[in-house]
Image (cartoon, rainbow, N blue to C red; front, side, top):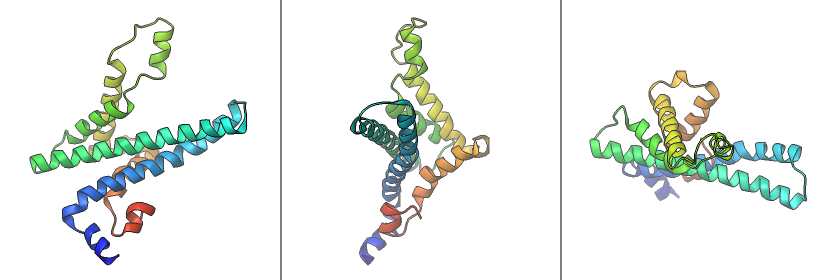
Length: 180
């Protein structure tokens, strides 16, 4: 166990383990946030067999946890790659990493965009929604990195858990099983 802890504390591997912990924090946070919401909404507004309702709850929880884990992983990986290529972090890096993560993970057409197409308000856009999602996430991550106090306090706390807390670990326990 001592050998593993030494490896975890090696600066050579810090970025890799921070990305792994970012994935973990994204999955944990996504599940913690989505499960209670899906549970309450399903119990209040759906009718059906308990097995079907459980399937809906777990499907929503899994999707949110997976998406958040993937987004954090993409963001943190791109931040590391850009920093290593340029030798330092530049002002636009958080925007670019958030932009790519937003496009890849959250770029499917949903919500109001689907409704507008269904009601023939607009034609089916090819890349409008993915570009919108990418820009929104790019801006959100840039603000978190450079102008944090402009974000709503609970969003700041969530993002801190996802992106900053994942930089801190010194044992396998607080890398994979506990946040701190």
